[in-house]
Length: 223
Image 1 (tube, rainbow, N blue to C red):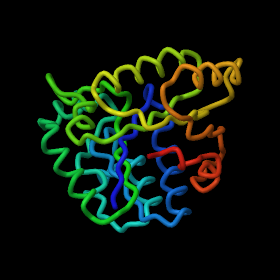
Image 2: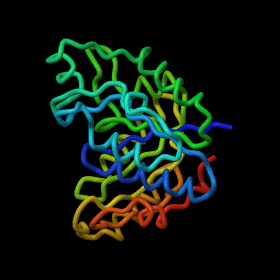
Image 3: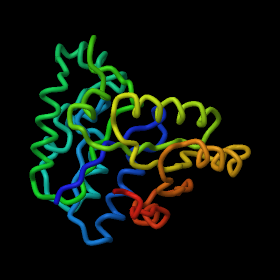
Image 4: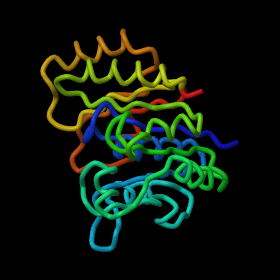
């Protein structure tokens, strides 16, 4: 049976890809076949490849083409709807949802769909990446970057997810840089206020290794 989650963040640069790779590694260690999708990525190399998508590709067990993992690769590392407009491209939720479903039907048991930036990142004048998760009707895993402002960002993101009618299946406290002041107190506040289980607290790991990060995660709370 295929189970799919949408991975979002409380902001950009909070470690969505690192956590997604750790989740894939943890699932694979549990004997599951894994796959991941980065439907829209902004910021590519000369070959048109995005680093986040390449990391996901390296961490999944299933052999997929790059274009399946990252069907929309935009050159400039800017907001996706702006990058798409510069390239004369139109981003549509219906098309992206179809591409995601194509991967979801490949046979993997544990599938992640990683968003870009935060929950309300625009795809165009009327649609956002949240609309993709809504269209697919999949539960959400939220990555919280443990830094100043994280409580407000996390609570607002969780509220938006629930108002959009989706389940917040769990959240991960990720340390994208040096530990923040009052880290333990902030983490405890989030555990008390967020309406979902904490899947793990991933410390800052240099160099980052998905297998090492996976040891800090507990997937048993994912339903």
